[in-house]
Amino acid sequence: MKKEFGVYGGQEVPPVVIQALNELEMAFNEAKNDPAFEQTFRYYLKQYVGRENPLYFAKNLSERLGGANIYLKREDLNHTGAHKINNTIGQIILAKRMGKKKIIAETGAGQHGVATATAAALFGMECEIFQGATDMERQKLNVHRMKLLGAKVTPVYQNTATLSDAVDVAINHWVENIEDTFYLLGSAVGPHPFPTIVRYFQRVIGEETKAQILAQTSRLPDIIMACVGGGSNAIGIFQSFLEDDHVKLVGVEAAGKGLDTKEHAATLTLGKPGVIHGMHTKVVMDDNGKISPVYSISAGLDYPGIGPEHAHLQDTGRVQYVSATDTEAMDALKMLSRTEGIIPAIESAHAIAEVIKQAPLLPKDQNIVVNLSGRGDKDVESIMAYDELLKT
Image (cartoon, rainbow, N blue to C red; front, side, top):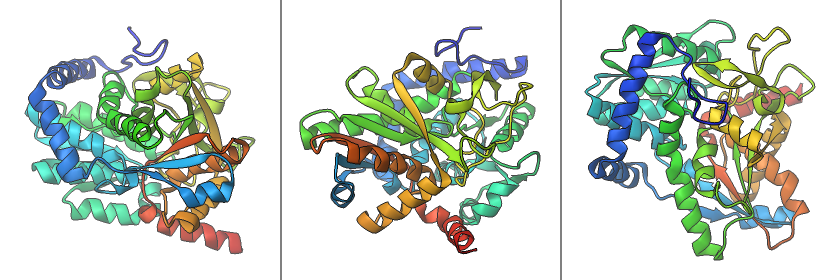
């Protein structure tokens, strides 16, 4: 079977799903070549999501670290508080075009769930969100937001009851209801064409960033950083710079409690080629080739796989992938909050942690852009729990 990203990608799914994926691919290709579809998508990005969002020069943080200049791409300022809304708006317009009546989605940290429920409410679609029970407990605010927006939130109790398990259940539900249901996948993962579709709708991040940094500095940045779980915010900002070889691209995944423990989600750092959720990619596995449970303080990064394009970009050397521990991410969250008055999502704080490591080592004329993929409102309870644990 053809792979879209080197040896990665493909469609490792039952025949009934292949048929639905082919229908989806055909509809997507027709839509993206239709100027009216693109015009509608851009209209809602501007008038509803609030794009374009700023590329903000973080002067205080830059001075605090004493090295490179740091710029924040403010996806946290989007309606619903993260980059996820870009993709959900695009996919729901596509679902309406295909005549689908129901929307289902998976969510970990809840931001994709909230964005899906928001777009479903906007376009009058029935909506069901699958979320691991563990994630529901640590993201209570987002669960209530989804319900307030009219979505049904279905808890998933199997295995670790986190994002990977929610994806399993969502896919099974889709297979059973494939005629009238549209599966709105939230990250750049899954069988083809999902990674390509998500990349297409998130490309706006990189497009804006490139124009904005050129307007502000008259040159491209030296480094771009983004956190990586499944990989949608990172692939969105990286897309416009992949051909600019002198721009260093860095993805930051979750090292959890340490790479020397089993409690991490560092797929690209410690994973191996394998199959998960209908795609060939890299996967965290045990010695017997079984998918291992993963962990991160961030509900949005604890996924045992990775988008297949990221696996390919690592193999080709175009993107460097590193990791940050829970402690490093939480320290970074607090530093950004106290220097710039911006509370980032815990996911985004992993990328800030890498900035804290690298910026002081670079000359003052170097520029780093960080994709601030979401805001930290949803994480306040997790932050409080973390602080209480430090006291014990």
